[in-house]
Length: 154
Image (cartoon, rainbow, N blue to C red; front, side):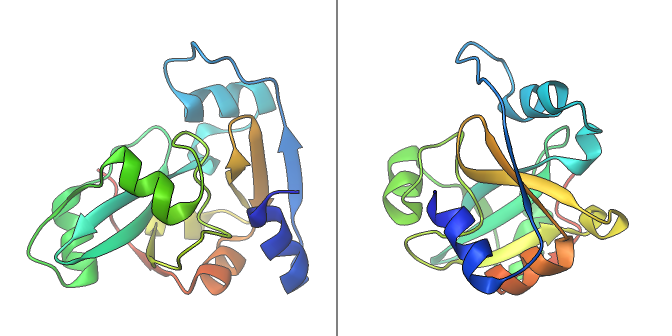
């Protein structure tokens, strides 16, 4: 059980864990997840960590879209944002890049979930390792992470 799954279980929210055989040579982990699970890629979200001002911020965006740094900065009230370094992401979240979950991170970071998530009953995010996804409602994800919804994907 990963920290992400433990967090969802402890909160007693409805969720489903989906596992698939991860191919390390996959060009896009998110696209691979959607394809292997047979779900619409618009429902599969990636977890990215950026630095915005003096803080690290988690952005949860659809796998087929890019994180818009200007929109993210605006959403968190910073002047600008940039992707955080891999070593920093792994140290702060406790997860390996490509398997970073917005749930169960070592340090709770401000979280922004792309507003497109609200159009779906459930979405998929990493459950804490490559090849493992957790399906839950966007509302529950926001509640568990203390996150907010904003347009941050472009």
